[in-house]
Image (cartoon, rainbow, N blue to C red; front, side):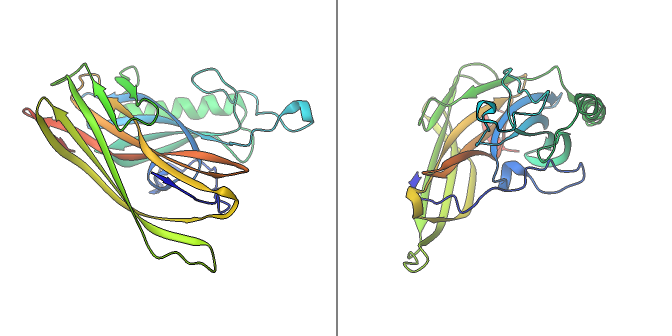
Amino acid sequence: MNLLLSSLGLCALLVALPAHAAKDPLAQGLEDHDAQIIGWSGDGTRFAVRLYFIDPFTPRPAFGEVPPCEGYVNHEGNAFRGGVVLLAYERGKLLSSFPIRDAEKCTPSAEADKRLEAAKKKLKALGIQLEATGQEILSALGAPSIPVEQGTHAPYTIEYTERATPQTPNAKSGQQRGTLEQEVYVRRGDARQKVLSRKVPYEYSTAMAGYLRTGLDRVWLSPSGATIVVLSFERVGNMSGGRKSLRLLGMVGWSGTTPKPL
């Protein structure tokens, strides 16, 4: 999908959610995201994610601007500006959210370590094993499918389709609204089974060569390979910059030899 979309000032609050909050950043967050799967429950129904809220306009110290906070380094060893939160899910629904490093101000490393240890204990209480990370498979650039070669009932392929239905544009305001429908299938041999679907509204403006692009981003497999988490991406920006938000499309498990949504 390639829609012209203005940034619309989509600088959502980069504040990690409290543990009891219901808002899921992977469902509606407007931040620039990076994510890492960090653990699974033994039955594959629960999993935990380390989510980074990235400031896409990272200041450059050489120009006298504020550098990233001390200790703000992602799992690949790269410094960043933003925040970090741990998220716990069950059957694709957010259970709990644990802020580790704040986005609006620097969180001292000692405080971040204290929060992390507390979050680990709560994740353990949820039955999530942090040493059991399973497997992450990224989609090739622009590819609508991801081949899975290992795990339960492999080999098979995750296939993604989408359809945008625009409304009549508002010429006066420059706003365009519509609906995005996303579907996920599992192809195994000659059989193709629909397993997930998502229908959401969108809104955009054609100002400043704005754009919106969506597509298949990655899958996470449980350690046994019996559970699949599917994520898409949403890229929004214009001539001045942009962001990439991740979207959790859902979880898929196997019932015998048949893939079904969890």
